[in-house]
Length: 260
Image (cartoon, rainbow, N blue to C red; front, side):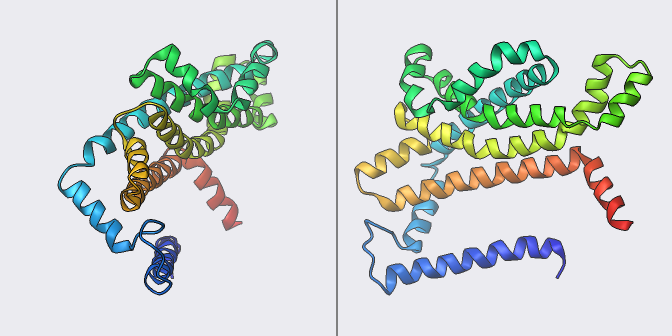
């Protein structure tokens, strides 16, 4: 079996096993619907919600906020990470405060973000950006500081400018680390989106989950969870594809090493 078939086949087999266990738990052990709904009930809720169009506004509301917040947080993390990696002075002044901000539970500061940015899209984007920020920030610093010393020495001998070295040596070298941070942050951005909708929203998948929990509508809660999983898996896979396509020299170097 080829590696591509294995990569597709194994998760499918795992999913089928989990569904079988789920069906057994509901049908054989008679688990109540208000604890775990039957798979057919969840599928029916998904079908009704998306075919009839009831869930689409909430789906796209969450997706839009997640994408905007993720992009904002990732861009800010890349810029600040580059400054910290390249400037010891900048690191001494700002790094401790950035770490302190990361150590602060985002759920705890969510009400404060609402006071500062209001109850609209801005507060949600800020919270999502904060959730996204740190993995990309740390991975950017790590990647830039692990640049091959021999390459840096060569650039110094060639009298290359600092900007030239950064753009043509350090940034390509750090790309793998940066994409690893971007993949991790996809899931964190979704968590931020759901938390922001729990705190204050009348729309979104997080809002639907909260509303369904009040009514003990567990099937709707599961349907929204699967919708969030779909967004998260798609986003993570998209980052993985972009990583392979854009950072092609990593793949080429690994293939070269394997041939020797």
